[in-house]
Length: 313
Image (cartoon, rainbow, N blue to C red; front, top):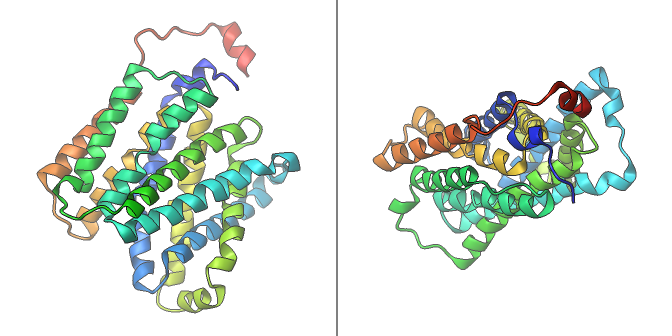
């Protein structure tokens, strides 16, 4: 077990903006998945496509600019198997299955039990402190997620299978923060991102019916949408989140990621003419409050001396 240093605990404004930026890009994923779904691409195939194209983009970038970042020790490969398969693949399969058995709003709320799990797991594995600010921000953002998704106004019954799958999605989402934090102690964020998407792609390839998928990509604008999905809502947020996670504790990053359902709701309003309700507005305000709370400077924070700062570099 490894304790976090002060910078990793509080993070910087740049770290926070990286995580919030990642959440915003993830929140726009519905713009791509709806288009691909209308073209006949299944949820599992969409998961494969986003990881596959993200892997291709990152491979080209590393080959041109940072070839040394391809290197890793085989004894550490379990880290990337965990971030790619145990986290990414498990999360996506559970999440899409939960949506099929419950409602999108219920699945989203169950998914966002992830920050609660991250706070608990981080306290156990990284000795991160459960501060009052984190708990208040977490509670405000979770209640905000319930209001934003409109779950309170839904009359749909929740099945036991749907609830378990939703919680499984939350666990998979939480585990990405935990396993990534472990990997970041030894590897650059670009290395972690590349091998995460690579492992997820290789695992999903035989399950995604490649022949049928190739046919679907040849019709309409499915290929263009998939390329955009892989870059804007997979690669970029993965890089930004991992960069931000490198400079702050996992619990804080998980709370900041609550910007995702807020952006998803705004996308529905702007692009699909979904109605804005009092519940939506209340939820957005609560989530914004939690984001601001997590980024307020600590009153008791002491300025580090040059000797301490240089010893960390």
